[in-house]
Image 1 (tube, one colour):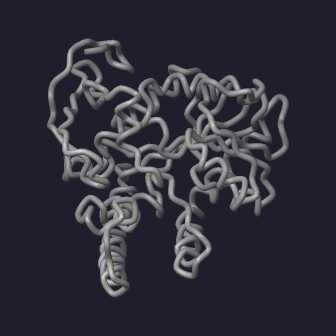
Image 2 (tube, helix red, strand yellow):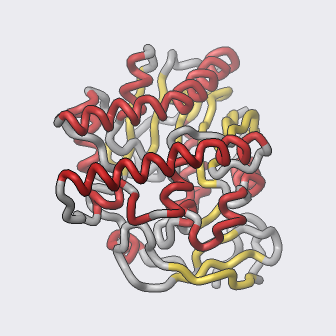
Length: 320
């Protein structure tokens, strides 16, 4: 068993075993352990890179197509992404005010998926580029969102140091065998005074405490680490960043995450990825049931976020 990512301790206590509830890519059980030194949760042992690829469905980063139903889905995604966009706009404003060599409104979105976030930022006048492990995702970002994107990893990229005013990573760090590598890479690419915006599921949330292994934020086996807000702050500080701002509510992630925890079989993206056979009437019934759960989850998720225990944590950190 390797040493803890945060504190270096070699002592861990087993918490539970779980499998892939959402996409059902495997029936294998995986162990989640807690560091006895600092409390960080992680998968142990971590699957190899070759194994991990088997647990990511081809359309994991799904982006809506051009059909009428897909256009409606894109409209929904735009609506729930607005709080992400506002948070990053504010971060870019502060970065532009404090950066020693500001790059006007230039940002990098790591793990860009289908590129919708970058398109929304471009519509507000912010130039950006995407980076994703998936060649298909990078291609789709170019073709459908008219936004440049590269296929690759932040630790192996041709991008120049000191290029970006802001770098975003939404739900990336928890998937990495060593998140420090990406954070150090981001630190190198940012201008002095630039901002990093990261978001991960919050393992200190009410949802995590109530639901345990059934919490959607665990996403075994794709999530190799389960960060609490305090864990993420320590990790950022250890890589040279200064934490400036936190946000515990995401309209995109918190209510939908609770709905998927309670009823993973209803999750629309998971049903699509699993290629579940459904008639039009069945699909409509499942979707209505799911979005009823999402709406019902809103009061609870707003309350937990107000108590700084939301099921996601978004942090703005500065490169001094």
